[in-house]
Image (cartoon, rainbow, N blue to C red; front, side):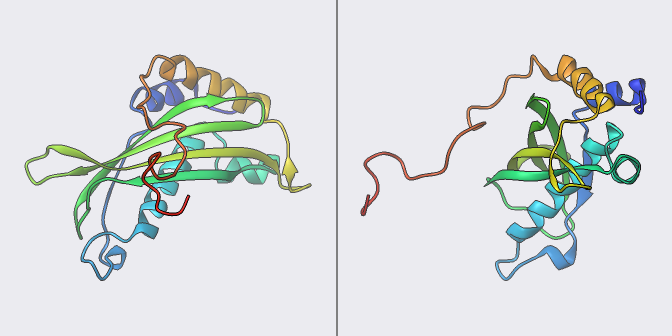
Length: 176
């Protein structure tokens, strides 16, 4: 086992929580966090998730395995401003031998400490061999770590937006 069982359990119980601050360079001409930097923040949360499972940079070097994003869906729900604190929570929604479906929620933190849902991210990531640059099954240790996370996250009530496709509501389009 390449991962720390207690550390993975603790991280999973906290939903792989991560906190950050909106940096000045992340602000766009509208005076709020630019859409590109939501992805940067979410990707940092994804890194924290895989690092906790010992599937991070050190493991990539050792095993020549990594994950690559197949698909991602972002919803922007509330503005974040310069210097504002945000918190990320990660949930393992599903997985198989080569893929993991991860759900992330970003909460903005108000001055009084209360939170609001600022954005959501849904990832489909693929296990890839760096030697062949093709999909390959997760190593046994990663599968064990994912199983442990799943035991903790399996009863999470996923929001209704999980798995949703993008599009105008039926009957609203002017051209389709």
